[in-house]
Length: 107
Length: 234
Image (cartoon, rainbow over all chains, first blue to last red; front, side):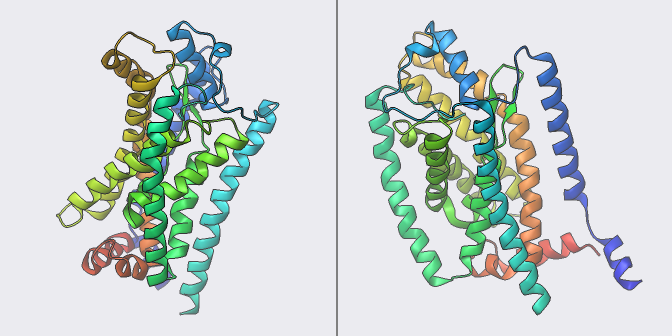
């Protein structure tokens, strides 16, 4: 009961703010996806490159890489690799927080 | 948005590489210093670096037709400074250049300068200015992370205005304004959200591992204890 009372008294202002911020961002994301023509979950550079190329009067094909680079053969593979990057980050964060929680419980 | 392979002229690619490399090398030296003095700094580096990996992979479409992503560099800038942050950023950027064709090897120097050096440097300056003032710890973290994110895109706009192979307008100033409108303006809501989320993460670090923040002299013991009390409630 005392534990529950302590939990209730905790300050959750930042958690509430974070939920509002993420929700607002999701709404913005959905609104943009619906209202912007051809907007989709595609690479940052792809659209930005097209926009810059269009404004400078050059097509994307005219801008040649200085150093040849491997390009993911499909959007699915690209998304998988982005997912892999996020997973590496998530594993690091989860691993360390788990380690810290374990350390705290031992004390 | 990372600058794509082939977008910068070769001389500007070399200039940005020349600026980036010494900072990264100094970052490796600083990291060795920090971790040899306290091995417990490594898990904290894991968390702050993990957020750079995680947040820079989240892509959000913008109303202007481009897409963007948070950078996540603010936490690392507060805990380890901009030079150590540049090491994590160059690893993330290299991963994206090699496997995702986002950014490129020739523009890696420029992207490291914007995301890994100047963005965190702006954040770190704000942190140093606010560290010993009456501004609350979470407000400080919010401001540092939001401005580290936003300034990255301002620098990217500047780099493109200076050295783009195919400039969008005739002069540097109007190009810079054009790039700011496309990339930096759209970043504002994301920077605000990133600031709030990372302030929350900092609260959890304070609750779980306040001693490492005190030992690394990130904030004073009194400030950390006050923030912990504030987070725990009455």
